[in-house]
Image (cartoon, rainbow, N blue to C red; front, side, top):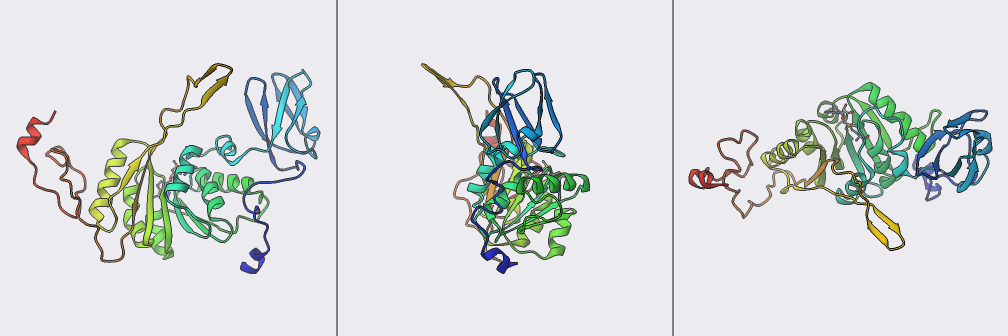
Length: 323
Ligand SMILES: C[S@@+](CC[C@H](N)C(=O)[O-])C[C@H]1O[C@@H](n2cnc3c(N)ncnc32)[C@H](O)[C@@H]1O
């Protein structure tokens, strides 16, 4: 495979296509009101909207970045979708990682060209596309998904995005159907980064810890604070990771018109939280946290995992006065 990859163009396997629009590619039509229509180009097929119809044949063979008019006078801007546009419009099995969060994952989990990244679950394959683009053809993304029907959706989406529909697949991609906690140890894979996007990432932490190389990063994407807390405490209880770092990102679009320059009235208020931690070398422990936990943090109401380094005894008095 390496010989075959030595002479690939830098943009190959990026999912970006140049030149005239071809049958089988996706296009994105945007009307004057900003409404978006995404579809695959099929010779002889018609696109219908409330503004009549358009023949796909009118689009095939033209360079993207043009305007077409439908049979009832609707004007549409035509481009190939960007990765960030494709993942929010492609068919979905499970909820996808939104582009603002994929960008954070690629940056903060330090995904690099040539990296070996393990991810679970694959869901609809949105994050997979960003990971594959970041590792490139010389890297490796090992994806695990326990539901066959979601794996099928992801396979189709990834092949559609990278333009390999019809049999071949991205050279860096391996998709395994099964539970990460069972399949990863069975595969015996060692990796640089592990991304967990699932309901119960704590169930996969031991497998992740065994597979991660020293200095590697585990990154979880969780929708609720209760999941965040349980994952973080499980990481601490494991003891073989650095202190977890958690954050969320809020992106606010702006309205730009003459003197009316202000944030948009609408925004996506919540997607999920991210948390990362680095794998220590075998047998090594991260230094004890210098700060004592907040009073009551691990008090009588707390029933989750406890940090491996030990938690100071509950300060009943402080807990009683905590507001
Ligand atoms: C929210 S979806 C993932 C979305 C995906 N990251 C994307 O961007 O399209 C969560 C997926 O995790 C899968 N899953 C949950 N636990 C799993 C496990 N232990 N091993 C493998 N897959 C798992 C579920 O079947 C589901 O498809």
